[in-house]
Image (cartoon, one colour):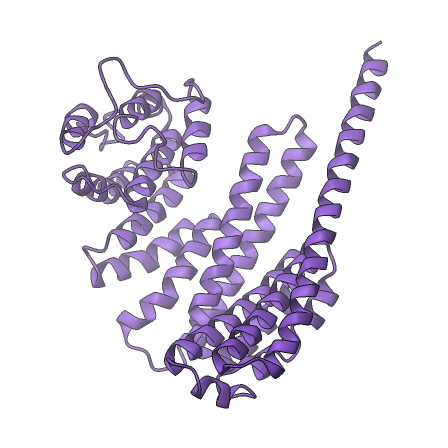
Amino acid sequence: KQIEAFNKNKLLWQQQHDALVEDITRKRDMIVEEAELVMIDAADEAENADPPTQRFVAVTALGACRVVLAGMEADAGNADKAMDMLKGFETQYSPEGPHKDLVAEQPSPEAAIAILNGLVQSAQEQRILTLLDAKRTNEMAKQAGIMMEQSPDVAAAVVNGVLQRIRAEIERERRAIEAAAFETQRENARKNIRFYADAAVKLGKLLVNWAGTQGFDEKKMSAYLMPLAESYMLAGQGKEALGIMEDILKLFPNNFNILIRHGRAHLAVFRQTKKAENYEAAMSSFAKVVKYYNQTNEKPATYWEAWLSIFELMDAAGGDPAKSIPERARMLYGVDENLGGAAFKESFEIIIKRNGGVERLQPAPGVAPAEGGDGPSSIHDQIMPWPETFAAN
C-alpha cells in the first residue's frame, strides 16, 4: 500500500510538473514571438524613421531585444544559440561604431552614449551568465578577460552584476536544502553551491588581476577587491575575505556597505572557527549600522541587510543568541511589518522558523507598528542591549 501510494503521488507530481513546463514553454514562445515582431518593426524604423530621435529609439530597441532573446535561449539551455545572437554586439553598438553620426544628432549625445554603453554592458553580462549557467567556466573566464580588455570602463560593473546573480543562485540552493525531503536533493544543492562559489572566486580573481595592471591607487583598487572578498565568502573562505576587508575598512572606516561586508567576513570565519573574537567583531560592525539608523526615520536596505546579518550570526552561534531571534524579529515588526520588503523578509522567516519561531511574523505584545518619528526610538530601547559578547552567551 505504501508503494502504491508513493507511485500515485509520484505520477501526480509528474503530471503537475509536465503541465507547468508546458505552460512556461507556451508563455516563452509568446514572448519570443512578440520580441521578434518588435525587432522587425525596429529594424525598419532604424533605417527609415524621422526624426533622428525616433531612429535612435529603434536602434536601441533592436539591441535590447537581441539581449532579451539571447537570455531566453540561455534559459532554455541553448547556450550556443544565445552566444551566436550576441556576436559582434560591441562593434555594432559602440558609440564610436556605425551609429556614431546618429548619436551626434541626438539632443543629448552624452545620454545617447550612456544608453549604448549600457546595452553593450548588458550583452557582455549576458554572455558571461550564459556560460555560467551552462557550467562552462573556462569559457566564462576567457570571455570575461576579453571583456576587460575591450570595455575596461564597465568591467567591474559587469562582474558585480554576474556576482549578484551567483549570490541569488546560491541563496536559492540554500533554500532548496532547507526544503529538501531527501539527502540526494540536499547533496545536489550543495554541489551546485560549490560550483557557483568556485565560479565567483574565479571571476573575482580575474577582475583583481586585471585591475592590478591598470596602475590604480589603493582606494580605487578596493572597488575591484570587494567582489573578490564577497566571492571568498560565498566559497566559505572566510580568512581570505577577512584579510581583504580589514584593509579596505582602514581606507573607509565609516562606509556602511563596507562595515557590513567586514562583519560578514568575520561571520564567515566564525562559522568555521566558532571563536568569540570573530562573533564580537562581526556584531560590532553590524551594530554600528543598525544603531545609526535606529536614531533616524530612514530605514534603507542597508539597515535591513545589517539586521539580517545579525540574525545569521546569532543563528550560527546557537544557544541563547539563537533563542532570542524570534522575539527580536517581532520587535522589528514595529519598524516595518514587511521587514524591509521582499528582498529580506523570506530570509528572515527561514531563520526564525529554524529557531522555533513562526513564518508569519506578528508584533510582540505591546509593540505596535511604528508611526512618525517615535517608532525607531522606542524600538531601539526594546531591542537593545545587544548580544555582543559570544562568550557571555
